Image (tube, one colour):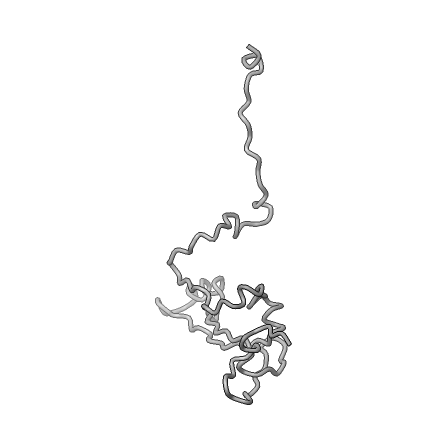
Length: 139
């Protein structure tokens, strides 16, 4: 029988059984080594409310605490919410982790110049030709 992945979709390597974890999205039980794990760090208060908090606060400098979450997704939820994407057979063999970019570092040019624009702004606009005087062209 053909095999889709070298590791069978799990990271067990020699262990017969792994404790299950619950999916953060749907609550499904899936093995811890198979679950897609993401560590999310975000502010407890959104940016709009931070300004209001700073205005109303007695303290001049107040650092808003962060929320640290370890998220476990089952494969179905990870694919559905675009946490991971399906890859073709050739790129499935690539085992290098994707490049990480930190704030302030320049990102490489991926060849998608219109990425990040609204769909209405992505439309290709034809360059306007210069208007010539047809009397000059005939002469």
